[in-house]
Structure formats: structure tokens, C-alpha cells
Length: 197
Ligand SMILES: NC(=O)c1ccc[n+]([C@@H]2O[C@H](COP(=O)([O-])OP(=O)(O)OC[C@H]3O[C@@H](n4cnc5c(N)ncnc54)[C@H](OP(=O)(O)O)[C@@H]3O)[C@@H](O)[C@H]2O)c1
Image 1 (spheres, helix red, strand yellow):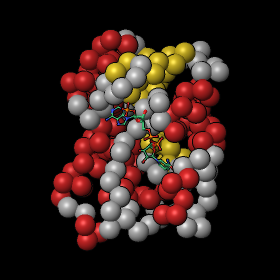
Image 2 (cartoon, rainbow, N blue to C red; image 1 turned 135 degrees about the vertical axis):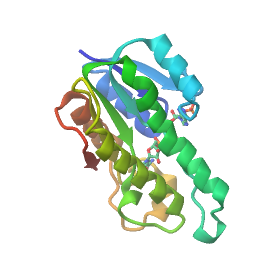
Image 3 (cartoon, helix red, strand yellow; image 1 turned 180 degrees about the vertical axis):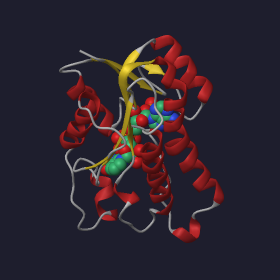
Image 4 (cartoon, protein in one colour; image 1 turned 120 degrees about the vertical axis):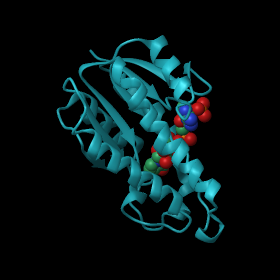
């Protein structure tokens, strides 16, 4: 049994990831408003989170908001928000969490299909998702003590009905299938991978 910290535990993806991982592991739930409260976009908040939770075997992220707007309406502040939340927020989990992850442990981050396929209004999301995947590819080569890192990159979720009109013809992936990719990352042996689901 591993001790797994799940950030974004109350979200659409996070809820299913928590339920799935909790079948085999001890799960510590975190978000800004529930469980072990922390804001991953704030390094000091993430530092306090890890100091309070203590050593873990795995850190799992199911969080990272990005704005969706037509390209002509996306301003510098929107791109900054996407980077601050989804990119630097998840990078904070790695930089602040590294000292608290046990030997042979893992990080699992979240990106999304927009890193590799476009939709209208999705430029900031594509930028953030691509950055997260590139970070994981590179960070995997330098993590110490046998620690692994992967990223789960889902298509639009079957349960995210409000998003479906923005993803015409896209495969819709059930949350349970996304959760299986997290299990593969947490309990498997791979590193530096983007799991497209
Ligand atoms: N839904 C989809 O179809 C889909 C598809 C592909 C990729 N994704 C990506 O998957 C991720 C999660 O999506 P979702 O639909 O599950 O989102 P969601 O339902 O909005 O849930 C987000 C979760 O993250 C937490 N959170 C948000 N900002 C946070 C922060 N700064 N620090 C700590 N926790 C934070 C939220 O709780 P609090 O508000 O309490 O903090 C909540 O638990 C996003 O990055 C999204 O882009 C989603």
C-alpha cells in the first residue's frame, strides 16, 4: 500500500482518481477548499502542504484551470493565468514535493488532448498542456532516488457534458479510464511518459 497525495481531489477527474486509488492505497485528499487545503499555484502553500502531510510515495495532480476564449480575445493575462495555474502550479508540486517523496516514488501530472489536437478557444489550454508534457519529459531524466514522473493527457471526459460542444467529433473518455492511467503511473514502472487516454 502506498501513501498517495491527490491534489484536485474534489474535481471531476480527481473524485474518480481518489475512489480508484483508495481501493489499494492510502489517499490524502487536497484542494483549495477541501481536505488538506492548499493552492498549488502558491509555492509557500504547497510547501506547507507537504510539511503537514509528511512523506508520501506518490503525488498525483488532477488540477489546473485554463481560460477558454477565442484567440483574438486571449490577452496576456489569460496566458499568464494558464501558465500560473496549470503549468507552474504543477511544477510547484514537483519542486516543493521532491524532498517529501520517498525513494522509488512518483509524480503524476495532468495535461490534456489539446497539447496535440486543437479546438476553437483552446490556444491557452494547448500552450499549458504542451508545457506540462515537455516538463515531464525532461524532469524524468533528472529525478533522483528512482523517483518517476508521468503525465495523463485525457480527451474530453464523457462526464464533462458542458464541454462536448467545444470538442465536436472527439472521443469522449470515461473518468474511470482516466483513473486507470493514474494507476498505471502510480503503481507501474514507467517514467517520462505522456499517457494519452
Ligand atoms: N474535464 C475534462 O474533460 C478534461 C479533459 C482533459 C483534461 N482536463 C484537465 O484535467 C484537470 C482537471 O479537470 P476537471 O474537469 O477534473 O476539473 P474540476 O472538476 O474543475 O476540478 C478541479 C479540481 O482541482 C482543484 N483545484 C483547482 N485549482 C487548484 C489550485 N490552484 N490548487 C489546488 N487545487 C486546485 C479543485 O478544487 P478547489 O476549487 O477547491 O481548489 C478541484 O478539486 C484540468 O487541468 C483540466 O484542464 C480535463
